[in-house]
Image (cartoon, rainbow, N blue to C red):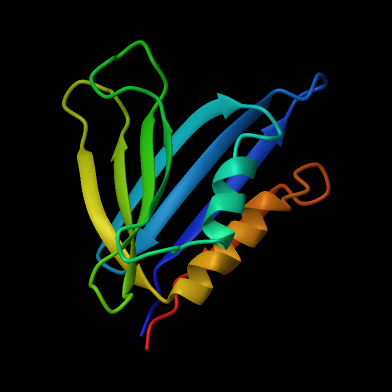
Length: 141
């Protein structure tokens, strides 16, 4: 059985501007987004994911771009939340590449909280110049 995964890739130019290329892959659907940022773009999100969840109503989000603005870069939302009162955790993904006639994708990836915490650690500690790509795989029971 194939597991869902997220591939984070970055290209860094001479003055540390970053072009991110994110692929979110579930066995039945794939979403892609690219956008500009800096080397700290994912740091706060990663740190928050490392502490997730604090309660059954806790959510942690990363959002970049705007939906419906063709002149802008892609829109991406990655939102961690508890899918049930007993602590089942999920990542909600929304991706829109803001091109006319293009797909607006919205789906979820179920994963253990420990795996989401691991994603947080990968993002919070990402040494982009040394390692321009990280791959996170969802884990479920």
